[in-house]
Length: 324
Image (cartoon, rainbow, N blue to C red; front, side):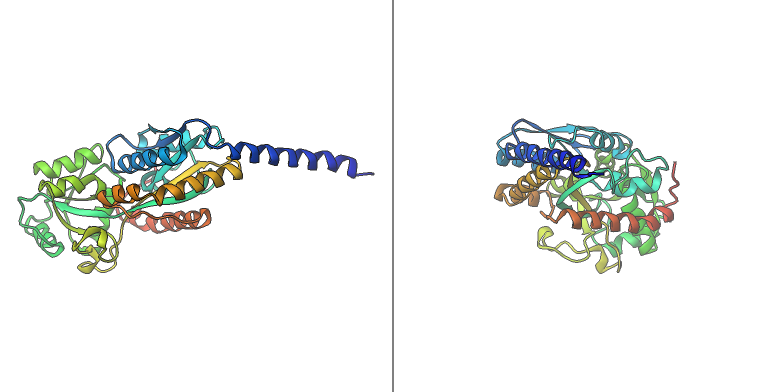
């Protein structure tokens, strides 16, 4: 049997497809890009996503439109992103809640974090900040531990909800520091932070962008941060790990696309991302949000997420969260 006559059309079709994809990529982007943010407007993830979108708009010479798809801890937005047309004109600004915590607390996750997306790069690394209401006598991690003890474990620790980043950051802190407080979940990061400002709750550990302005305005007191050591990004603010060795719990932002997005288009998207993160105004805007600008390769991003999912398992279990 002569296989050549069957093989040649397949080769020709493959070459034709590759040429077509390359041609599309050459003109990319030729129209507005939708950036799905699976979080509510006003959240820290949304704030950083909008800074990224605004800068990428000027770099790409096309409008990058933020599409907030909040709900179910980010699962709704991630599922919409997974099922979007894989043409490079729908991208996803992913973060910790859905991609890292979701797999541990949802039995029937509507997406696979590692298999359903094309990885492009991280673009931000955000510390969590331990903040307290300024009226309480706490100016250090040691004093917070003592304060919790003086309240017989009944001081209120606010979070953005059960299973949220702030919930698990707080639970991890209590486990490692061997201290206790009453976990009070709110409906989102905004309400939880507002509760600490109002004195309804006494402390929380929450993404830096959510509290940067409130700290500068004196409505919250910053006690420490969640990175492993001090950073120029946060001035002389100490790391929680200086008092509680081993504590580390940060957040991140990364760019994804639907899994079947053509490789030439993904390469163009990554090129735009790199140019965006190198923009001087972008760096200043992220610094104001207490967030480090960072990039990595698609392979490094995938490995990073794999490691994050694995390390979160024991924390979720210790927090008593069960898959539903």
